[in-house]
Length: 314
Image (cartoon, rainbow, N blue to C red; front, side):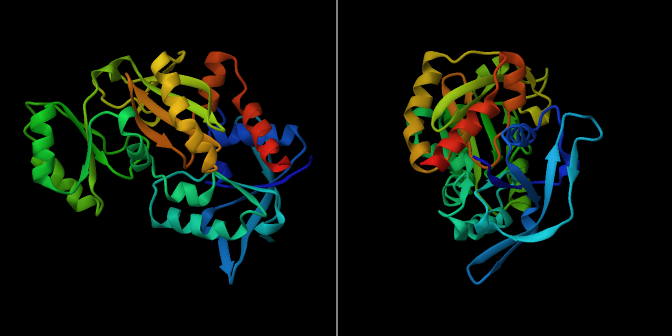
């Protein structure tokens, strides 16, 4: 089948052809003969219940400094497309939430991945709380006394913004650290939302494992190992990619959440696992395809497009 596909994402100029997962998705789509369009979230327009966007047809190629070609912009009715790939980066703020509301107007006639209502209802650090048996001891609150009591019980903790991304704003607070009070005051100034506090997992030194699930099935993984002196393993924070295989515990985690992901139309998902615990379920714009492909010799973008075309076929 030949599909008309729109990518809602950051500017094409900013794509890193060595790491970007959306780039791989677009490359594979072109191989299959699909027609691609690109627009920014701010170019969406909802008039009544008719959703459109100022979009450009585009192609991509693995050529450094010359990785895309885009045509002239035109306003297109998104309901006339077969698929919209919602791939803009977090933060998961009101702008992001508004985009999910707007995209709901074209469902189910146009497939949106991931399902915008499910994305809105599944922010990374909150969705995981629906699987408490799989996550480390976790507290979400704005109550300073509750945080201090949590710290008294668990000693070594991680404090991070509820809607942060890429490792930004993540702090490891050791038992002897005297800066927790000042840190919470800073968070209060920067964010209106509660913070998330978790027991520190020393297994992070061996890596924070990103596992990719497609249609609720684990298809690949990569370990992100933090730099010396760094508590964060995110690639954005300098984490190094290492090949890995899934443990029995990680397979069980994937099996436990897989049915929920499928039911909610969360087709392309990345979960983060440290030791025996799942810490996040990433549904907004998961990454990791290129790193996993390089280390494992896989082609996750092929698996993804097979799943997408199967959904459209159904």
